[in-house]
Length: 142
Image (tube, rainbow, N blue to C red):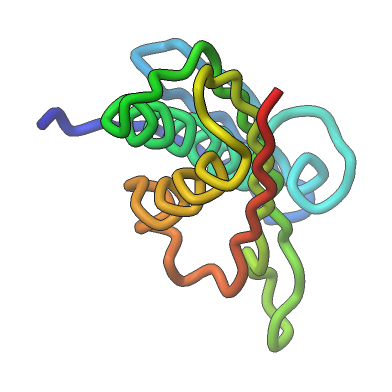
């Protein structure tokens, strides 16, 4: 399997400094800062990137699980919200909320939720984030 990579650079002190990150062979190239991470400043932050990775991975895993169960989806839409909170005085990713809506012919809500829980447990990003104390899931059919 291929190895994926990203690059980040930081200049200056934490609060007054600035950073730049790049990944995906140039698919994303942008700025990050103390303000974009801990306040509402312009730019991205590591938590947004984790949210994007988790939403994408979960969507792919759920699509695969549904197809293997004989219900290939027409569409899976996932949003992920990563919450950074102080834990023992240190900023910590303490909760991730996944919200998924699927258009899946021939399946009922209970089966969809069962498959969504399996995707949450099994997607590679969920497994990588196993140290996050709480990963909540809301799943519904459209």
